[in-house]
Image: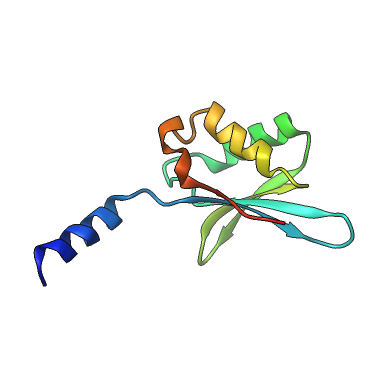
Length: 104
């Protein structure tokens, strides 16, 4: 193994994971927004509580085997969540490339 591949592997492991914001269609006009990939040192229940109050919606934190802790909110809250993460510096403004918004 040469140094260039080791260097790339080291950089990849040191990179912070991306935060994925997805919207899932339920039945009819109902949908759920899910947020995954937040850092482990963050209190996700507290973040969910603040988002519920700010967006006037219901939500909870689900522990998924593959994805870890996932925050779920009622309704299409993708842009609200993105703005919240940047305004509250949950994700630093210079790291806004970490946020990936999926959906329709």
